[in-house]
Every structure is written in C-alpha cells, then in structure tokens.
Length: 378
Image 1 (spheres, helix red, strand yellow):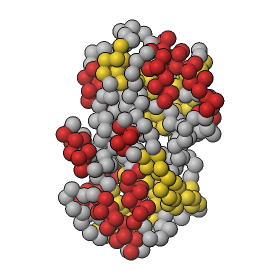
Image 2 (cartoon, rainbow, N blue to C red; image 1 turned 90 degrees about the vertical axis):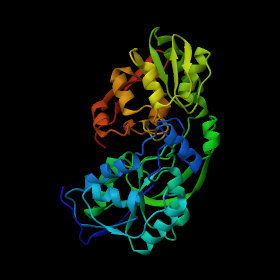
Image 3 (cartoon, helix red, strand yellow; image 1 turned 60 degrees about the vertical axis):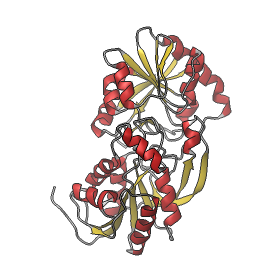
Image 4 (cartoon, rainbow, N blue to C red; image 1 turned 90 degrees about the horizontal axis):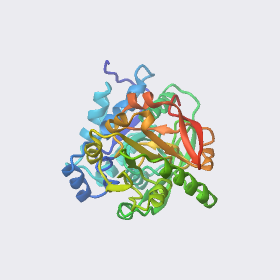
C-alpha cells in the first residue's frame, strides 16, 4: 500500500493504546494504573492499534485526506501502519493517560480538523467529551471493554466505511450520541451503574453506528425464565459450557442452582461450576480436549453478540467452539428492539466475523426458537 498525504478532509486521529486491555483477562475495564498493571501481569495484549488499522484500510483508494494525530501509540504508529502520513502535533507521556487525551484533543481541535476519529472505550469518550470546546463531530472505533455510549461504529470496518462516505462527500447527517460510562468497581462486583455524561455529535447511520445499550422491559421476565429453563434442560453431560455475561444467561445459572458471575464468564460441566469469572486463557485451558459450547445473549438495543463486555470469548475460543457450538438466548422482545438489524460480531478477527455470518437459531422461549441474521454486510 503506497503512502499518501495531500489536502482534503482534515481528520484527526486519536488512539487510547490501553483501551480494551483488560477485556480478555476478565478485568472488565482498564481504568486506573493499577488495573492496567494487573492486566499486563495477566498477559493482556494491546488491541486498539490493530483495530485502528482495520478501520483505516477501508479508506484505501478514497479521496484525499489531510491527517493530524498525536505521537507514537496514540496515533502516529497506526496511521503509518495503514499507509498514511500525517502531521504529528505532540507526544504522549510514557505510559499515556487521560491527561494526554485531553492535551491531544485540544491540539487537534485547534488545528482545525473537520472530524475526530478515535479508538477507545467509554472512558475515552468521556475524556474527549470533557476536553472538546466545540461541537466538533467525532466517530469512535470500538476498542474498549465498556462501550455503552452511542458514539461508536458497530466494528472497526464500519467506522472506516462511515468515514469513507464523509471523505467522498456523501450526504451524511449528524446526530447526538450519548456518552455513558459505568462504575468499574461496581461492574466487577456484578452491578451495572451506568451514568449519562453528555452528548457528542456523531455521523448519523443506523446500520454502521451502534445504538445506546438498553435493558429489557419488565414483562419479559417470564419469557427469560422460560427460555433459561429450556436451555438448562438441554445441557448435556460431558460437555463444558462457557456461560457468558448478562441477566438472561444468569437465569440459566439460577435454573441450575449455581452461583453466577453476572458480568463475566463461568465454566459449567455436568451440572457443576468448574470455574468462575475466567479469562480467555483460562477458559481455553479448561476446555482443551473436551467438547465445549457457549451460552450467550444479545445486548439489548445494540445487538452485539461478541465483542462488547465478553472479550473472554477470544477468536481462538470462538473458532474452537464453532458456529454450531454457540447457543444464543434472547427474548422476542429483545430481538424486536433491533428493528431488523442483524446481530453484530466484533470478535477482534474480521475474517472470523465474516465466517460466522448467516442465519443462526436464537432460543426465545421454552422449546421456541427463531432464525435471525448474524453479521453480514452492514
């Protein structure tokens, strides 16, 4: 891919290199230096930069772009890896932190960019919201563990496609995307305390931009109980089940009479809890040489199946399970809230996401299933 740099749409690129670091190792976030250190000690590997490159490659061959970015891992490295050059406005500290995000946002804004493309999670969106002095349009590449905010594309490629439309001069509307974040300490204890922080202006596209996460309505409770009872009855002896996060899946554990990690992944075999709140690496070891399946649900309103709060299901584990080894649970009301949009995949491996695409059975009640579209073209 040849390098390219010429006048055109002025785009700022900002990357939180620590975003998502704690996801696969079961930390449910990376807020704070101590959490980052623990994630690295558990063997976590940075993912944000690679996601940026995936997004930027969607721009190859598009009209000219004038790039502005921050130094090193906060933008410059990934811009070059994607084959672009740009003006570097400053350098981050080592390690970088929220203060660096603030400095970078203000410098990029002062440089007169037309849109800010950033990679991170809800914490990054908060830092950008707090640092912007204007209504500058922004677009998020999803890279964090927590992404409840409505400022992110559904996956890196979608971010690139949306940006490409802007570069090519297509008429793209603007909307206000909510910035939300949760209390990580409460989150690790199984409690979701989401808070609204404000709004950012984002490109308006229902297919490419993720929706703000929303919960189930009260009258779904009976449906959840019924589908969970059915799933519990279908669990076979000798098979290891990786039981994912969320209240719908938690009801399966309740039906089994087992304790549950509401916002983590547990391993169940032969009706017993083998391990609680496992990391991706731990799960892979536990299912080695054994038949295994996953029990997962859909994020209400968004439709994500993998890649939002359950990064413990790594691409390696998903491949190991296979498409037929994934049990999806969701009430009909939850599916209806997607308004026909497909279930979304953002596993971190674009080739795997494409391979999984197609119609998939979704358990919606007691002995009740529907076929629903998983992934595919946006």
